[in-house]
Image (cartoon, rainbow, N blue to C red):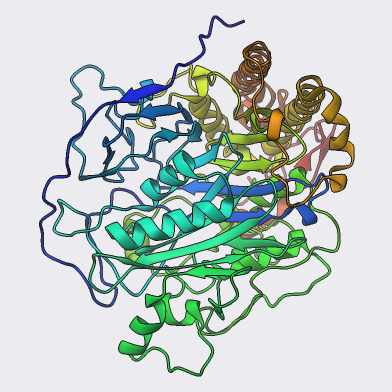
Length: 620
């Protein structure tokens, strides 16, 4: 054992009542809202059990902020609450530290030094028991194997939060937390979040990417897409959810994707009844015509055309390569350019979902590692705009993987295993294109401290976030070559982690583990847990020890990478041998137009290329 004690459920005896929520209403067609704490522009992917190689549900998320978002993964403990107690609701401050309070029993959020606990913006009635779950900016996965992935979207209505001139209590952060605390299935989570948003009001990010939100929600048997935005009064919400057909995958890249809604089809759709009346009142829809939720309530792409659509096209082309989708279009909001979901011709593996999350459109005509903008060594990163971009108007292609990502992850929900080991998150600190995904089952008694700390303002060599940020930034010196070493290391460690997941599943699930080889034999309508739902304390210690040690090994190997890369590529060389610049780049930057040779025919003689070097890349 790591000396980790079993966390006893918290007890909350607070009977505090909500303070008066006063302030002026913000409503109407979308404008610029200035209360937003941080920019989020995330890509999410969902794969249903019938679409995956192992029969698991998967949901992937990249937390794409501006380099200031809180990158920590924490564990929120299960808790019991006294009758009549109230739950605090806090403003969604997503930068570091995202929370400073003690109400949910997360020690990483406790005030330290000169910090004081932040005051809640309101209260809602608490339930008798709340479930344990993992959390980054949003809820990730709970002990019932309900998982979530978030993507901010534009919407035609905006609202201000309570205490900041508005009435709304619910942010997407809070909605995801409530789903984690109270829901046992994806459908239940969607219904709960919709009801809470309607009852207490919803406010979105309000920064450049919009005032609406999308969540992908999975459990071991199905997956849903959930869209929500404020209503025109700023006191309630409009929402819709659509179930992803089994055998399909879908992608949400910062834009709504749900089109024709039929709330009479309860198997496929859920939503607020006000979506129809509000659309009719605003002249956005006429009864008797198709109800296109995206065309009616989205504000479309932001920043530039293709900001969302290019990622949707790219993800679908990787997940279902034989289905040819258009690369270009006129209007992604009003035209159904891409389907809600697709059935891939081959089953989707966990590794393929990771490939999607790490993608910079390599091998396409939009490849960010090619061209003068990528520099001589092919970096896909395009830094945040500054004075130059104010003087020269334009835009870069928007890839799935970004340097400014605080973390990304892939949730897996597996029906044939006990919840404690069946539900897990593969967590990747910093940018997905330079990360190593590490698994953490929901039944762990604690997370490794390296993943629960990380202030983006201060380098910390005990932090997994900083280890990955350090390596990714160093790799930008010679991306084309260094990233091969980084990804080789990541692949080795991820395969080792995958083997550990398989071994621990077999060890802890006992006689039921054989179904992992044939999950299709399970009852698709059963929860798949029953007596398997809880592992013994002894087994949970075994689980915790094994996965903490694995994460510690990954971190140790990752901190070895900077020295390895420095030794191999120092001063632009390859192990001390000059390799120079690629010829195409020398032509582009005017190298032939440089100073003329010295008269007299003297010429510099260069040594032959270093062993293992090929034009366009280093062969290790």
